[in-house]
Image 1 (tube, rainbow, N blue to C red):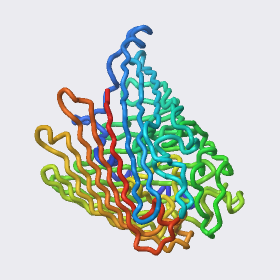
Image 2 (image 1 turned 45 degrees about the vertical axis):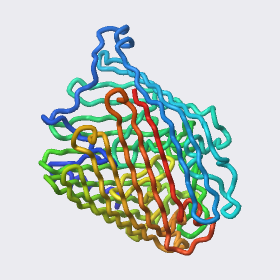
Image 3 (image 1 turned 60 degrees about the vertical axis):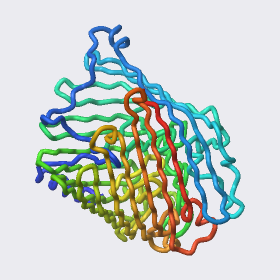
Image 4 (image 1 turned 180 degrees about the vertical axis):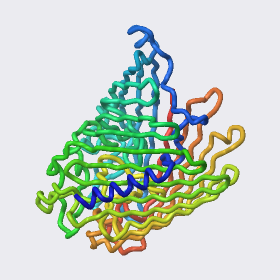
Length: 478
């Protein structure tokens, strides 16, 4: 614990020795911390002057979605496809005496599909990602798939910033992101605040005690959620049994951001997982004219409570230290951005983040390929992005990624929690938002191919290598 505190103090000193902190860069969009004039974002309009206006001046928004997904395995393994339909409906009140109320519901159902539960005769498993369009805990259910997604009370401070409590869509920081790549995204239960300290400096404080994971309809405490889908393997090669055995009460989050120095953004996040582990994430991004670059550093260590548990019940072993470095450099011209990124998860331990809580956001993170569970790993990525700059081409976004992930042999569980092989991945994503009479209609295409140079059995190949994967998504936003 003393080493963790010393490490935290070191980052605090580093933080205040700089005068900038950078904002999160999502896959396709940079989220700016401040307005162009440097002021904090204003709270939403309209303002209400009575309880009646508080309700009547609110607004309704949402979307309808149709999601087709298919996985085509090369060779004799079974293929799967499905089509899901659904949507969301949300209401947010006006702001009255600095207070706002919100509620959001979401639903989905299966319209057409192959038999997702039919196991492949060699792998003895059914569909993986296709089932996540519905509810992985009730895979036989096709229609009763609704969820109360948000229910919150939000207070806006007079000088800027807010605090929100309840069931909330956080979508901030490197870990607790929406990840809206299924019919239902990750959403959280707790308290979250965004507080301007002074011009160009923002503080985030949060406490998360519940989650409704992507691909599920129920809400869970963190102790119930962690390990719910896949507990993986312990470093000694035995099966992990941490689900419900780590009585964590929640996750404390503190983040500090600034973009005061021109062309630089700095982003520092500390996460304290009660009775589990501590994680610090530091990121620096540089953008100037036609050049951009970035650096991500992550450190994590177990808390002392883990040593009190039986070996198989621990989420993180006492000797494990997750250490990750990720570098990025790129150029941009016109609507094109070409970049290279390199990640190394050091051999001190595996990078760990419960998959039921979200997906991490490294420069090399991409759909169907994440860093969780890997140590002593190398990942290289070449990425080309395009966004139109004139006319209706401005509504087109394209993203092509070529990557290689080199992991230790699949039997080296000390660095490989989920038995992942080394693999090449090609990913293409395209988005187009229609103009004029079809404004609000958006189409998204995702295609990827994975290939592993390792020698794998049929069960190890299933959804891991030698397959094509396709998503076609239509959204009508309102």
